[in-house]
Figure 1 (cartoon, helix red, strand yellow):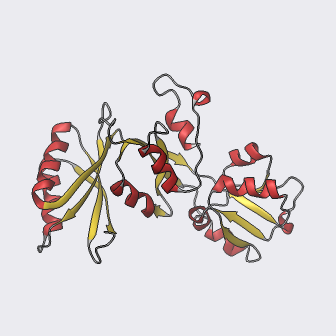
Figure 2 (figure 1 turned 30 degrees about the vertical axis):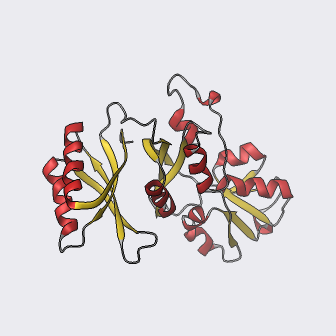
Figure 3 (figure 1 turned 90 degrees about the vertical axis):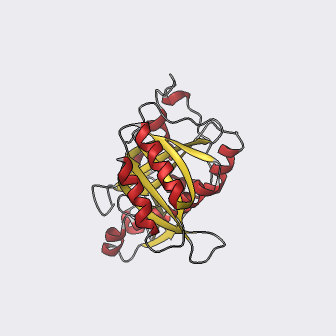
Length: 264
């Protein structure tokens, strides 16, 4: 859904002309992009209820990819089962762990229902249909029911109506250029080991006139108690963003621009 919405009418292509290569694991998605087997990839980076997808931040830093654009998708979770199955028959609800975490209130109201982790939201509905399960259901968007012939037993079971997921469109590093009209950037950096270095680094962004809209830290693999900071910045001109990068370069051990794109 996110891929079709983000890419329709891009470069003259409509949704019907987009071929989607489905992957079971996020690592496979990055592998296809880096190997040039796909033009790009659409992956979630943050949900308004669950928070950030930490695994994807780690891969953005480690892999030679760049963020080309972003989009916001309104998320609506539905309990989907085989046609004819009643709610009272369902004892297991399968879905991606992130989706399950967005439906905690509904599970609390239905203690008889077991939440079961699955690799994918729509994939959970496919599993229910292919195996002919009558005691299990999937939690997914309505499109999954239409795609696999399921039936929505309960619609809108997410905890909050204002449930949005932010997606990134990723491309190979070699063919990346900042988007026309870009006004947002994502960066990763590691500060030097001196008191106040994070404050000094962020002051460089303020001096350049860019606005910090998000910051979070992730541990550096193989370096206990070392952290990399991920930030999102809004800017009005490329000159401001270039100045911020130059300032960070003077204060940090490592700076990587993850992408420069139009804010959703």
